[in-house]
Image (tube, rainbow, N blue to C red):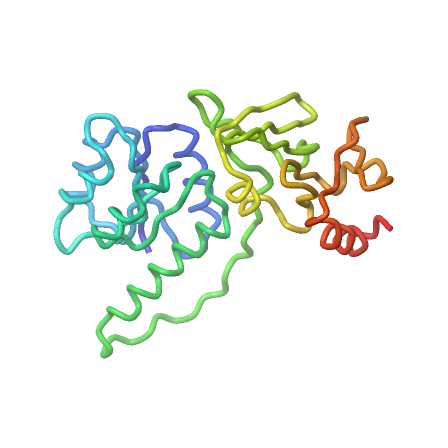
Length: 244
């Protein structure tokens, strides 16, 4: 399958391009930070999938989707705002990815389009010969919104994450990063075998735990509480992690 990416954030473009390179059978034909330039390319260069940011200057992703040729590519919208999900499905979008985008969620969206294209193909066409799939490399970092940029945060650098109402404070070996994000979205991105929610306000890196005592976890010299709701699954997880 062929694809193109339209996003006005350079880091988001780089992240999606990297994801595309890791998926066997997915060929990136172009990436654009200008909606009008991307539209001109798509009108002359048909692709199977367009990863389309909702918020772009001059022309939004929702407006651009209505200007694409018919029959056009499958649209996968990408945005940090979930309030546009209903509108995107009104435009027959194949999928809707919320930033920060987890690699497994990206692969799921691509597979959905792959299945749609396969079911829409004429039954008389011979099946393409199977080719050995290259191993998919798991991501080692995530991108989070920090002020007016997307900041890369390596999983290995994360000590713990603290919830602060609608914000999250990421404590890392390089310092603190404040981002407007929910625990739910971050938990979808983080490897579940390396991180654990221990409290409604705290999520910790298992490898950074110094010790556990009296219902608290110490990381980087700070004691963090273990909530009653999270106590049993947390202790089951660290037993599996061979910390006990």
